[in-house]
Amino acid sequence: ARPPNAPTAPRILKRRLAGGATAVALVNQDPGNCAMPSTPLGALGPTGSSYGYKGSWSGATRTTTGTIGRN
Image (cartoon, rainbow, N blue to C red; front, side, top):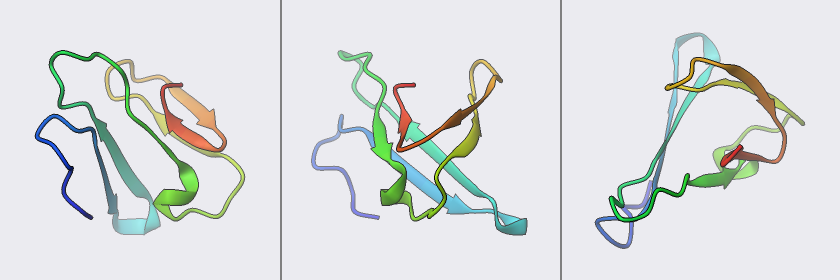
């Protein structure tokens, strides 16, 4: 992955886990902007039409199509 253009740029981290699952972290590094980063699922490599995810703060499980983040 390429480093962000600025120290406060959002970061999107991806790692393949044992068993084939993929972990994705969307990180907002800007203390002056509380916006949630987002990315198209296609940029992360999956080819399905929808994916489940679990919010790290809420623990809620949801389904998304097209984009992850800002949901």
